[in-house]
Image 1 (cartoon, rainbow over the protein chains, first blue to last red):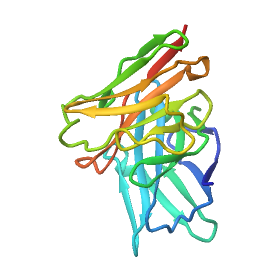
Image 2: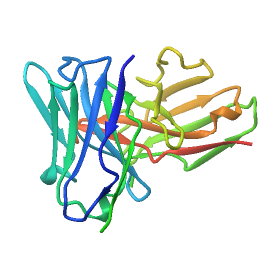
Image 3: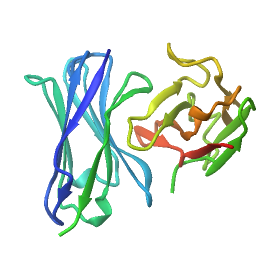
Length: 119
Length: 112
């Protein structure tokens, strides 16, 4: 059974970097049939896909245009996990952040992490 | 503003059948969106996959839940409504132009 376990701080200061990690059990971050996504949800923006990383003989990334200039999603094969880094955050980045696996459809979600951007 | 449009709320009494719609704001359902997927979300928990590829149920999802897609509209139907079905439901699709996932705004289902 595939499970995703998120970790990271719930409070980030404005202009700083938001960093979250998603640990995978029951699958591999290097899977040739899965992609690993970050998604967030806020009352003002609803559900918003942020980006993904996946392996198909080499590593690929894809990012949403709304955050492309300040986001990085990186796999860590040694720990079988992937991470989200969102730079230069503002209060508008306050949201519940989810990691998720997609295999043609999103089938597994992490438990969510409430991240507040505030001084 | 969500790319996929859902009614904000729906309701029904135990035993009833309810249906929740999902439409593309740019009429992309039926053309650009081949597959719609549906999720159940209880606050504070991970969303749960209910229907994938328009009408396929993962193992463990009761057959009370069904999905359909016809032309430019898609819907999730729940028959034999139960109190534990009270939750938020949202749809999702892969958007080729975005090369990413798009979502509906969610429908809060109340079991009266």
